[in-house]
Image 1: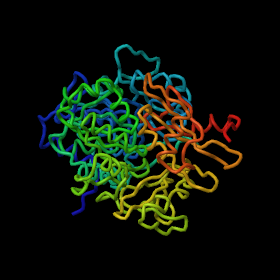
Image 2: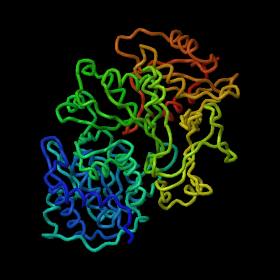
Image 3: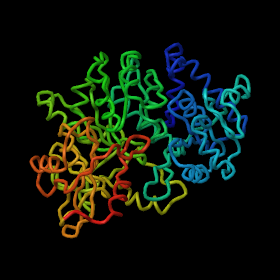
Image 4: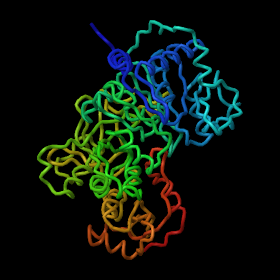
Length: 530
């Protein structure tokens, strides 16, 4: 007997065994798994009644609400593919993605409908469904979400669809920072295996209460939209990231698990309430999206009592391919040494396949923590390819391996640590300088709240490091002090040659630093650094 791998089966299981268990908490609304199952089936019925069939694409632009969770299941169990959209994108990018994805329908939150209103007459959509939000109006020609559900056929039974585990389940678009956004084709199998890794390695259980701090549109919430349901845990929705409110929710809702980019971790540890609150649940927090500084991980564990878990991956890999496995031997190490280990991306997860670091000729680097190469991977979670873009697919997947573009080293115990994105590595006078290594030193300075290190042009060395720093309020620090601090804590040639103090750093919707924007500003300016 063969049963295709699909995370949709976990909804069936949760409804069967946990019908009265709380499935979703969304502000004042709560739904049991039975109610959640009924609403997703009603959505499937309404979609089917509207003409959505197996193989069709439905775009969804919603924040972390119960509606978003319903869409993941209600759309995909029809055999259709969901296209999660970043609601912070510019109208031009949304126009490109919606049309390029061949979406027949769009489900959009009223608060974020403005960009869609600008481009509505340019979209090849058959219907728009709007989730009403108090205080927000829209001029879109659309139907209200709840009305749409009510217009579905009564007692709808899902059509007898034989899901092929290798068929498209979600079409997730990359940010398009250097070119047009690319549509990453993730299958039922890839989503299932990634979520299985989440279940196993993050010890997701029936009693977990998961806070959706990470946008669900980002790589399907890293797989937690499926994994929490699989375990019968509770999804706690979060419409926007508010560090003060998040800290309140920890004890108010007994949060035991959450995720976020290092920027979100930084927001939490620097929230004034952080030093006043005693979080009794001691939540586990997975972080990824950018290499976190060891000092930041140390603060999160010391100040908030969070159990930090470092994971690594890309949208193209569903997303996880590495995690920093914690061994009992590490418990005897100092807090600083533990944080340094947790800053490493780690080792392969149990089910995803093979990952290694290689030289340009394909040979694996020595396991010495020194030789730098590119992370490549193959196996069960790698994308099917880029939608309607065979050239970019062939450029990314070579000889059966997906090339990540991340440069890293491998330690003697097999743990991988990213030194930089290939495009972020600073090459100064022929020497490689890791921007993340410099950032790790800067985060140890008491005046540094946030930082990003980039390259800037230099007549003598080609390029040199420059630090952009958001200092703590009322901190008194100078450029010379920062440079001297770095020179005291690392090789002199790696220390920044210039420092700018800024109010904010540009970030994506998921909190990842947008270094390309900083580079654009600095490389367009005359070279003033000798």
